[in-house]
Amino acid sequence: MTGPITGAASPRFNVKVAGILYFANMLAFVPAAYVHSRFVIAAGTAAAASNALVIDPLYRLGLTFDLIAVASGLAVTALFYDLFKPVSGRLSLFAAYVNLMGCAITAASCLLHLVPLAILRGADYFPVFTAKLEALALLFLKLRVQTAAMGIVFVGAYCLLIGFLIFRSTFLPAEER
Image 1 (cartoon, helix red, strand yellow):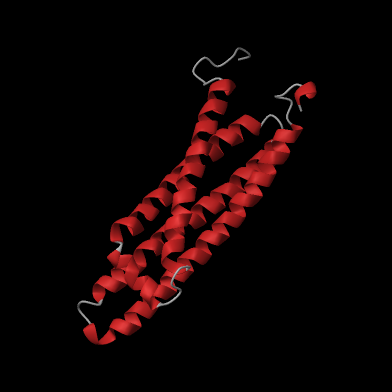
Image 2 (cartoon, rainbow, N blue to C red):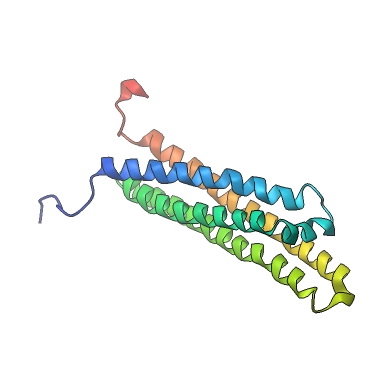
């Protein structure tokens, strides 16, 4: 079989979809980072953990933005792998693995995002331990931020790898580079 595959999407279409999803990823990341900073960086105490329940809709909105960023990141990874496979199959595969690791770590941090709410809601059942539960919730908030930061390191490495693949590609004419 040497003819073109008729069912496959054209590279130009894949590039456009990847660009839109990459933009969606950035649009989701910025508000998510803002929301998370409101709860941990601003107060830095157990009061920040209690604020998570007071401003519950905003806290859950941060989780929604995180999930959008993870989903769009996964889709961009698949599209970029396919797009840059002709440039360097191994490097494109390695870049995909690196970003998948970053997405997995970010998804795990999304789970940690829900733990403080569960802990603080349990304070109603154990009023004697309210102060300790607030401190435990703050611990999970901080753990969530550290986990998300580890995911960002992988995504940053992925961006460097993709940048190198873009530089090595012949998609753009030499005069325009």
